[in-house]
Amino acid sequence: EVQLLESGGGLVQRGGSLRLSCAASGFTFINYAMMWVRQAPGRAPEWVSVISGTGTSIYYADSVKGRFTISRDDPRSTLHLQLTGLRVEDTAIYYCAKMASVAARFEHIDFWGRGTLVAVS
Amino acid sequence: QSALTQPASVSGSPGQSITISCAGTSSDIGAYNYVSWHQHHPGKAPKVIIYDVTYRSSGISSRFLGSKSGNTASLAISGLQPEDEADYYCSSYRDGSTYVFGTGTTVTVL
Image (cartoon, chains in turn blue, cyan):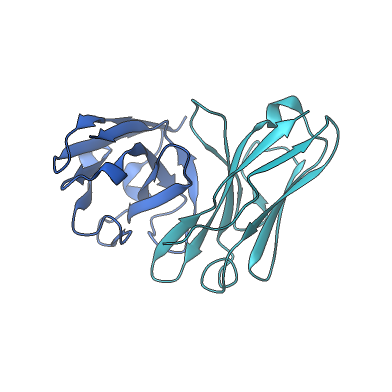
């Protein structure tokens, strides 16, 4: 059974940093691209970043480019998102999602985690 | 990064059929067959119900049907059931190696 468990969220001051993690299980982690999606209260979900299964292809939304860094720890089957220079508008639930193949582009999500809340004051 | 446009709410009685629209552009829905639909019950993990415009995820009822015409995708739910009450979001691949989500639709079963 596929499981994605996010952690690392919390309350942080403007300009601060956080590191989110997503522990994956139930599938061969290196074979799949992974994505971060966030949803602010009362807003539509917003795609944040995606990384290919090989880790060689990485893409970011313009709103986070230069401030957030996605990475993966394949031996530990864990996805990370380093958040720096946090702004009030970064407040959201951050979801980890598994893609349907190793590719970061031209693909779709096939499984979501339950999310972790990041609040920036 | 503008979101895809969905109606804020759609409602129907048990057994009825409803349709949710998702309006995009020639850079996303109109250009690619990578439209997905996600069902989200508050407090739970979202679930992918439709991918690649028309394909149902494993275990998803045939009451859910996805389609696309031009720059607009649609999700039809037939035989509405109480458990269908949830938030629904469309998503699409977009030019420039990005992804975009819809504004979301709350489905209410009367």
